[in-house]
Amino acid sequence: MNPHLLFRLAVDAVLAVCVLFGLWYIALPVGAIALFRFPYFMELTAAGFAYDALFGMNASSGNMSFIAAYAGTLSTAGISLAVAAIKGSVR
Amino acid sequence: MTYLQPRSIPGQRARRIAISVILGAAAIAGGIQWLSPWFFPGVFLSVARPFWQAEFSIRSGAVRPPAQILAENEELKRRLAELETRMASSSAGELIQENTELKAEFGRASTTPKLLAAVLARPPIAPYDELVIDVGKDKGAGSTTLVYAANNVIVGRVRESSAHASKVILFTSPGQTYPVLIGPTHIPATAVGQGGGQYRADVAHGAAVHEGDPVSDSSLSGGALGSVVYVSTDPSSPFDTVFIAPSVNPYQLRWVFLDVRF
Image (cartoon, rainbow over all chains, first blue to last red; front, side):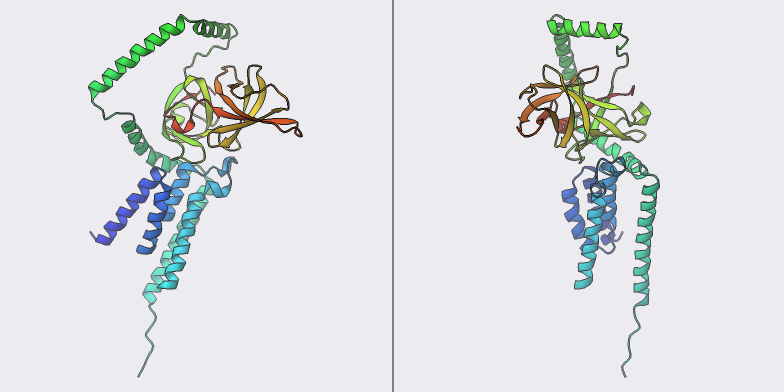
């Protein structure tokens, strides 16, 4: 198998474990680095969405604001867009 | 002779396709989330539950030698029997017995034991003062099911349930409220969650509330909720603010009990 694909799968596994056990402070830096390393690294945004599905998404019950309910999705999407802009300007 | 290289049409086309796919997937996910808000939480909970249960089993000592587990079981049984004997012969045991008999006479005896559930994820792993437990709709957990810790201490209610797991919102979560009785004179108040496992309640200025006063559940079971840790008094305000610490640390809960009758 392609070593680059293997490395990307390994990073995806690390992100999945971090989401499962709430280790967002590890997932975000790993994901930010992976965004620079790999093209179209949407796994980070998917991980943020999964984190919200597991622990957030409470906006419908009125207990938390939309931003808090989707904090994972919004933060990872924001990081992805920021890294994409930086990559576009330096490459 | 110079000529311009043709633009990298395949590369730009691939980029447009990739962006279209990403935006399309985001639109589909957003549409599903709008129409069925519990779809994705149910899917991801069913994926995460086996991993959380495995972690819970490991933390609970499931990988210890059987002989060690059996020895611990026997020791716990011996201590339980000793405590039950001591309770039955004490005045507290007589009061509990009388309370149970009185409730039975008035038709309020509980004949349904509470359902035990393991806490798979709790703060700070699960943010927003929530727990994830391994009991779902299959065992009768619903959106009005109350959740208790040991010794009948109420801690929260089920917020949403999938087939085999549920999310419990703690009453200490910001904005959550619960009616309570404060102090030996049972002053009624409403405990408001402050986050971080703490409550706040407002009582009339000059009410006989002091630090250390017990705070109990206002329901018929009358379980403990916590105790008063600080009373803030402002002479210009008609209310005093009472800060309440719960009897149990919700961040250390490993087992909870569900009252699936409601």
